[in-house]
Length: 484
Image 1 (cartoon, rainbow, N blue to C red):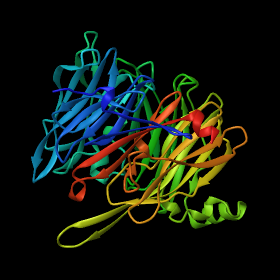
Image 2 (cartoon, helix red, strand yellow):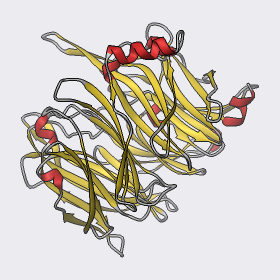
Image 3 (cartoon, rainbow, N blue to C red):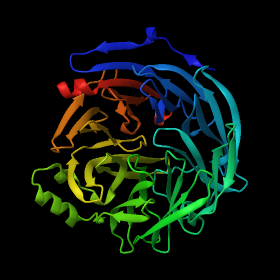
Image 4 (cartoon, rainbow, N blue to C red):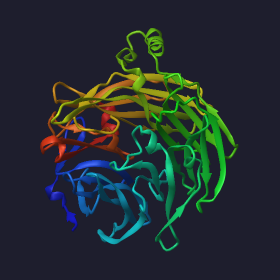
């Protein structure tokens, strides 16, 4: 069933400051795939068990929707179609795990489902972690299904720190499309099978890069589009045996065969650090930035060097994690955020608070020399698990950074930070909401960035304990933001 909407059901309001569209839907956005300036795709959840995709136009309107039979693992563009990967979940001791992975082919012209193919079957009782790997423009390249050493737990996400057995890999399966557009699964041999898996990425030439850790080294392996291993590079990393790490990765679209990687990890001496690497497979070399030890001495030095700056608001510095890497022809920008979870247990239930305490923006040269860094004094706390609460986008010579911040008890406000990449000036501006109250939370990780504007999803919980949501999309113009 496809749900289609006309413009007559949309609320379009022009304000003197910002052009905003407010449109409410009974779902929560889980992740976004940017198509082009005319269309974007949202993986959504309607309630505790129903999933689907929503097609969003440039005016922040949901044009049509399509139900999906299971939890969505990711999406990718494929010519005039959209590929949607979802899982069938098998119950194991009342905890779900992936049993099969399906690929739905959706025709964007006809607005219907063309096929539903099983692309991976979990023949073991082990947990499976799945990643959809697109090129930098959102075109589908690979689905990576990693059978872990762990049994009887819920299906894994790749954007959170993982446990010991979850980081161990028993089998690594990569799904591609053949010339007829049909999925083909291939088991690949990788250093991740004998070490600890970190993260993967693919580029516009359909090369696959897999990052793992083994014997004190961070290893990046390059595979060509036929999944033949071609090269690998490694760098020392003083990580302890606990796999308490988080990493973000980016293919630099300005330079061929070059990958940037930022890692949050704990050393053998139990010190948390941030490390930045640049893997250049054309020159077969690795550049590294000086490691940052996330200690009280580090933050004290920043506060003393810039008295009165927002560095004074960063308290839990050992939880500073990378969330995004952005590149220009001459710079590399790393966006970081302090994230932590506080859980309180009682016999009836466990209540968790999810905190996003502050942000740090680091600007590097192409040789990984630190040119500038600044802190954003943001803070928000929710009882619903969210991804990162800071999201950046380069528009001309400016960096736009979106954040949702606390404005009282169960009250939130949205802000955009406009950072000049020439003079490093910074402006903090509120984003007005239309048709959305302050009790609604904006999930910055799912902002849609277009060439002339951006769209934010603002949600609130309708059902008890976060089972049902309602989302309102808000549209803002770069030009009007800068005029204010």
